[in-house]
Image (cartoon, rainbow, N blue to C red; front, side):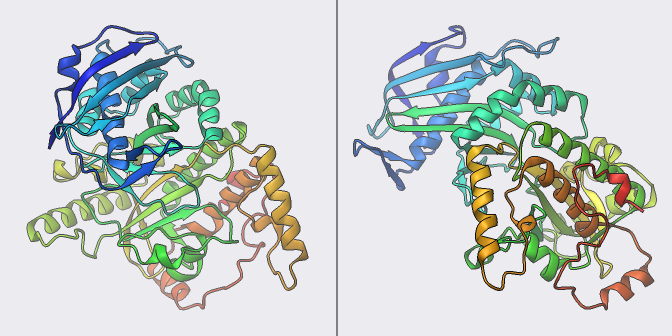
Length: 463
């Protein structure tokens, strides 16, 4: 453990009130200087230093923010709170380079954290009392993911176009999330900027969709596309790999996952509504992150039998209760965990389902990667990929299978895939058994359900 010793700090822009600098910085932070980054001036900047700097910046902003949650809708969408950190070093007298840390729209994200049920003390303790850990990114983006030690929050780096997108959409995003409490869009809880010489990193923090206290047996990143949508060999070697559309379609759930009709209808209507707002935002390339928990399999990676049994009972109680009652997605999302042990509150929001083989499942579902606008570069990439596909001899896929699409078509295809292929209406045990014996259809038919169109409505596909 190390203690940060700061010889000089300069604050500028907007606010100057807050706790003393001595109190602010007299905190222990784990620092291991092992992985190194080199900027344009050949000066060493380690990954651990970046993570420690991120925590210090969040810590300062949170300790400064003593006012209550705004009574009215915040209007600081363009405000930035910046702090400069000069000449500081760790306990081993390793000099840490000067850096600045900015917080965008601090009052707005204070409001959003309250809206999402994130306590300020919990947010502060989670981000500032224990070290962050870098996660591997299963996607094609260059984003770096940092996970808090209790797995509650993720800090994700964003590219410049995503940064511009979030700034432009923040007011509408806040309004939408305030009016749609059951939305599956990411619960963004902070927006920051770390700068140190040539290093300039924009970051967003958000609630982690997947729980840490129960085992997620399968994890999928689903877009509704097919070209290139298969987990790589390197991804499959990971302890907890993230699979993609083709893996879901042909390897794991070739007949889909089955939900009770009322739950399915409400759930897909929520997805449809979220797709509509993303289409209005001119956003594409988003995904559904789907975590699948098999109730009758091992619930924990550890060997704690009593913990396993308690989790099994909690998960079973939730599944049986929600399967017995017809409840909509809003009820599922809002329902506090009161069915069993309160220590397993992370089960709240999970959706009961069955596999085609009759396995009892709990699903953890939400949107990810919602900041990618469809601009000139994306349009050019779409046209290039379409042309290459057209001139490739023997190609069986069409341009509709490319993951990059204009937002209107992307939303329509996405909704069709979720409706026709992923989340299907519950069948009787006899019907499931009969369906499970059918061979895998290696070519998804465009005639299943509705063909994608700009005017597609969820009620057109739900029978």
